[in-house]
Image (tube, rainbow over all chains, first blue to last red; front, side, top):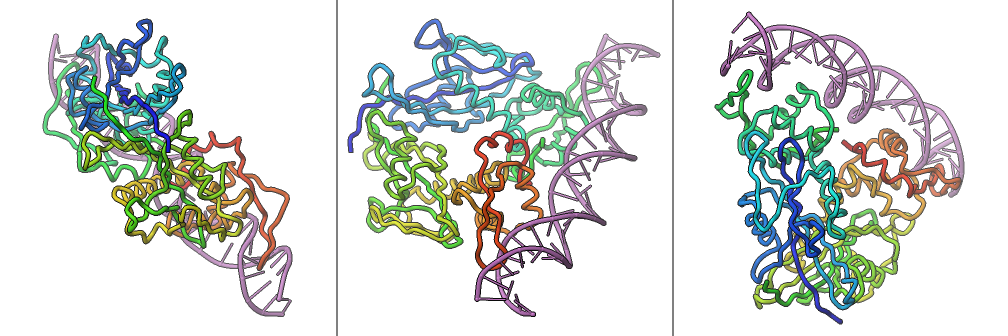
Length: 220
Length: 220
DNA sequence: CCAAAAGTGTTTGCTCTACACCCATGG
DNA sequence: CCATGGGTGTAGAGCAAACACTTTTGG
């Protein structure tokens, strides 16, 4: 069986909320005129997931993020046909700093870009991003990943805002609360958050309750 | 950036119906006491998907099958830590020959095994299979892959039987028909199939109607 | 005419949706 | 006491589930 040379990288499509917009983390591409999904070689004795996690840690300082394998591309290099670039793409959700606003980053010149108006991405990366985005919206509907984009505790209004931003549609407040609470995936904490208006009860994710959710769609 | 040696293979988890049971295609493993998912090296100038398709063609004679990438494993070889085996796993649905019975194969000594009582699989392969099976059941609920396991034309009873076998539960005949037909994913042909009892109208898949289906679950 | 499988509607309960007002706090 | 966002219930519509008999063919 003939084998051949291949290069291996992991790519990360990392989403987060910045100033009430869904953003993706991009780094300068190999072509300096383009932005690209952050990627990294996989070191010896490191799993794909570890490599992706490490890259995200490096760029954002966040270690414990939601991470899931998305797809693996293995197309041949157009120039040198003998050489194949294997890109294992991971999908990550990073918590927004409290209040949906927050930190900026300039490690390796990577930055957050709103997903809705992106151009000048490196070849193929727009397709990968579009796929990841579709997957995110999809997941939000039948699974319960929303709060992975929020800090450890959050109000129901913040959570609803998150869903609205990603799904790009308005949701009914009462229905939203009922469904999320009935799904049993979050639980109230004892603390409140003040601000303008009446203080909001803060909730936290119940890590034990992941499995149950898949039964029915949250937003059919 | 340190790179290192890696071997690349594609694996196929190919499902089909044999004698009213859901079966998976297995080949002799590298350890001769074990069965394994059929795999193949990826040739130069061949995409992952082409490699998977070719392997299935070789083992079953079927070329146009439903195929989708499932997951990529890249664990380190336990023995030689410098060496990594990258396994890109594909998920395939093969049409049963008419009437849910059918052809046997003995190419490369590969055979069909019912998924419900499997043992003696090669390391990791049971997990991969379990994952693929979960995915199949899942897909069946919200998407419309069921008839990929049937021949080109089929009766509604056969289709229902397929769903019942895979989901391992009984479905109501009238409700099943209504939903499938309302989903608009199949259309009646002009032919009937005789047999015992009243002849059944045959249906065919409408390839144009894939996108629509995702809107709502077929079996909530 | 009997056996065997195909085909067909309606009622009931439940779930989703739409909708408007009171509550708690800070200034 | 007023502005701001947080929090709450219900009625109606639409969808899903349960259910049994008639039709067509072959032997």
